[in-house]
Length: 332
Image 1: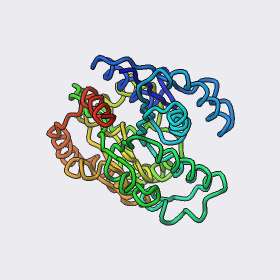
Image 2: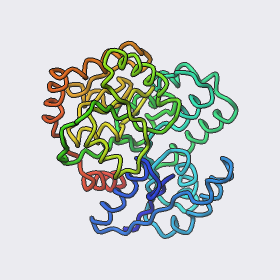
Image 3: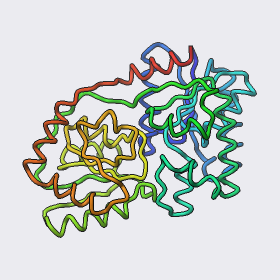
Image 4: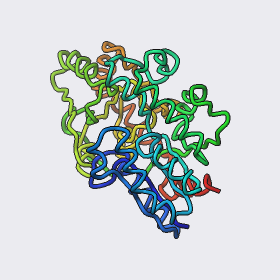
C-alpha cells in the first residue's frame, strides 16, 4: 500500500512526535509498504487557520496517490488531513498524541488545570478561538476512519466531550524498547528536560527541588533540552528522571528512563498509572511538599536501590514493528 503520514514535526526537529513519525515510517516500510511524510515547513510561519489551509493544499497531491493517511495529531495536521481525506475520498487514521486544546488553554490562562478535569470544569471559559478549535477538532474526529489513543486514560477523558461512542477507537501503546546498558550514576542528577510549557509544571518542580536541595545539597536538577541522541546519553548517566506535568498521557521521557533502568518520579496524572503502578514513584503535581519529600526519599540509597530493582524487573516490550502492524490492522 501507499501510506501518507502527516506530522507537525519531523527530524531533524527535536521532540517525541518527530521521533514517533520517523520510527513509524521506517517500521511500516520494513513491512513492505511505501510511505511518504508531510510535515510543516514554511507553513508554520503563518497564523493558525492560514497555516492549516496551506498544509491542506500541500498534502492534496500525496493524499490522492495514497491508499490512506495516518495523522499524528488531532488539530495541527489532523484537521487538514481529515479535510483532504473527505475531498479525496480516502480513509484517515488520527492518532491523538496530546491534547492541543488543553495545552493551549493552560498556556493562555496560566491556570493549573489538570487534564482529567479540563472538559468538565473549563468549557464555559473557552475563548472564541478555543471554541472554534473544539468544534473543528470534533468535526475532524467524526471524519476519521479510526481514532487511535496510546492509553485508555485519555480515551475516557475524551469519551463524553467528543462523543466517542459513535466513533471507532483503538489503543496503540507507545514504544517500549529493549533495555539499554547504562552506567551507575556518579552524581545525584535528576533529569527533567522537557519543553518550557506551563502544563509541564516546571515552576512547581523547581520550588519542590529547592526544598529538597536544602536538606540534601548533593541533589542536582537538569532541565536542559537536548537533541534526542544526546538526551538518551544524559539519561544513561543520570541518577533518576522526574516529570510532574499537570497531565502527561504517555510520556516518552519515562519510557526512555525505563529502557535505561533509571528510577523515576512521575505525575499521577498520567495514562501510564496502571501500567507502572508497581514501578514508579507517583506524586500529586500540585503538591510541592509531596514532590520534595519523594525527591528526598529517592535520594536515600536504600530507597534508590529498591526502585532500581523494580525498574530492572519491568520487562514489557512493544516494538515499532508491533506498532506499525497495529496501525495497519486498524485501517482494515
